[in-house]
Image (cartoon, rainbow, N blue to C red; front, side):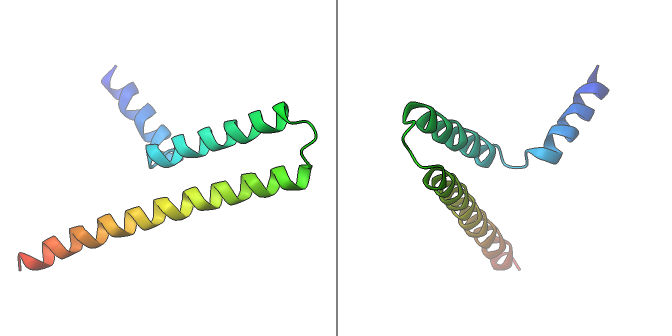
Length: 81
């Protein structure tokens, strides 16, 4: 049973490396989809641009946060030398 859990974690890890990134993207896509359904007069191009801009923004924030975390970790290890 432990082997199956380890294998499933590895497979999920292939697709979801950062849980907060995945959750934010799923929520953004669901919210944009709900907005499109609730506002049928919304132009398709605007909906697509909103979806793209949101996903790019989420990715940018995640990359900046990861870089800041990595820089802090490198700074801590360099000060130990």
